[in-house]
Length: 200
Image (tube, rainbow, N blue to C red):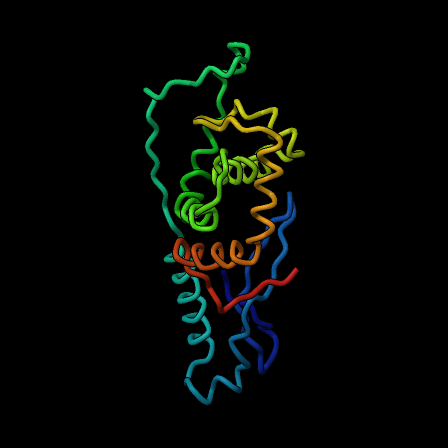
């Protein structure tokens, strides 16, 4: 973030500006209006220095909102033989472990345990939701495409297409509650900066 204002103006308006990279191009966007020079004179003797301090505080808030993740991988875990060829059943996409750590911190497993309590189901709703989510990010495709590529994930992710359809029914029934859970849980992982809002 940096300070943006018209240096030729006698009464410039100060903005906090962000650079946004789009491929090889970089565009800038004002994300917060600090105020006009004449307006700021009512609260400070040095509006320019005040504006610079606001930018510094803004950058500090962003820096403090970043979260670091450390994960542990157990290489003693054995790959489950699911009847595939050797080359396919032992080739795993371990990069999704980073997503799995973030997913776990959202408490989604507890959510599905709660909404499925008392139901007689033979599949793991959380496992299906997790695999569908990761596949949508890493290798977008249909639900059948995801099902045909389950061997790319560690763990017991063996379920049928019918199980996916049953899971989608559960998700539809609890859709609003699911979104509410994600909203509240994600704010515990990374605090939202409510000073700036982006709209599509």
